[in-house]
Image 1: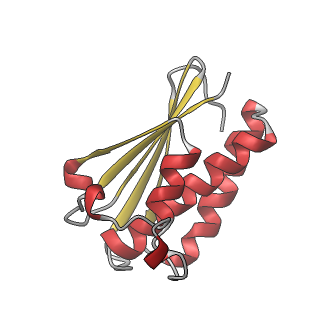
Image 2: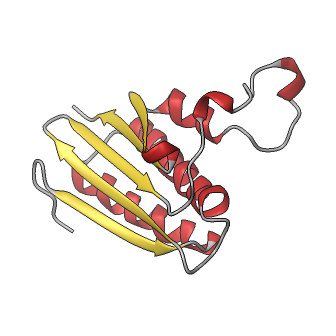
Length: 138
């Protein structure tokens, strides 16, 4: 899996939660290839696995007939990651703030927050069924 500047690498998986382990090893190989720092490695891995998990469980409702597409593209000192599902999307503005006192003890609901905190930018496309995150890897 050699990736040059502005080259794109893709991974397409059925919406089965067990495929998160496939995503983890794929991201780990990519991170190793670019010799990305351990701190940034963790940020990318957590963000991507959270986004893929959301796509599988919430976007595609764990329907294995639907796929999740993960695209990595490097532009000089930036790694862009796009995760797309086949669901109807969502409005990220409607996600409850997990840091609000009433949400602190709730299980779940932190994935979007984590992606926003760990990446350098997050954008939603296709009515929220695609998330794009960018990481500065200089």
